[in-house]
Length: 236
Image 1 (spheres, one colour):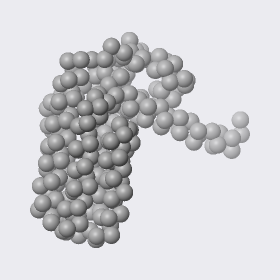
Image 2 (cartoon, helix red, strand yellow):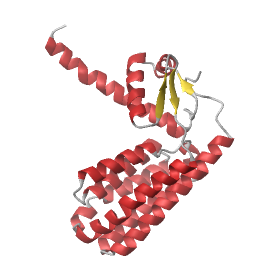
Image 3 (cartoon, one colour):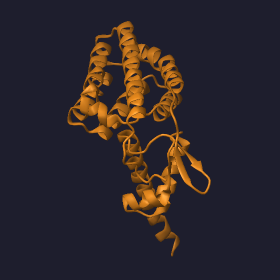
Image 4 (cartoon, one colour):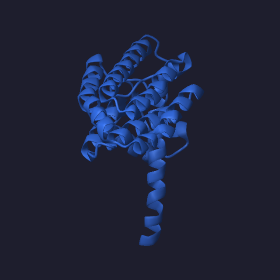
């Protein structure tokens, strides 16, 4: 195969790897991949109708995010997320995001903040229709784009990493219960407060929002531990 042909194939492989990684994250969110369980790459590959190679590569991406860990000669184990982990991630995010939201409220223009309204509305719409992946993607974009207005790329990178590690298992049930809609609406409310220029109120709203998310995490995690789904995708 020529060098030119090889270069053409690389993006295709990388695209498939990303697709598989997103599918695996969705399975984590839905509760199909359970903490502590070891999953075989060939078995998961058969579930998704792809070869084992992109599954292994995707799992390595998830391992770098702390979502899974490699188990020699067996596959990958979904990492446990303890109550202490959740508390520590929330504390770090609070130390970074709350004062940054206050700073952005004081320095960002109305136009910059209004530009984020469509994304905030996407979060609400995704929650209402039960689109979990759409919800999480819009939520990620909103928070990171909002923080980016502070002008510190490393800060945004750090928060992005924390968000990946502080995932929520079994988000499907929360969506079905309607719990996500209330959390989603907090984003448009935050934007309204920031546009009004009330930095102190914006910080307090962000503090309550993170506490609300933390409460949802804990409730869902305890429920997932009590009622683990009978179908475990690709499990050993």
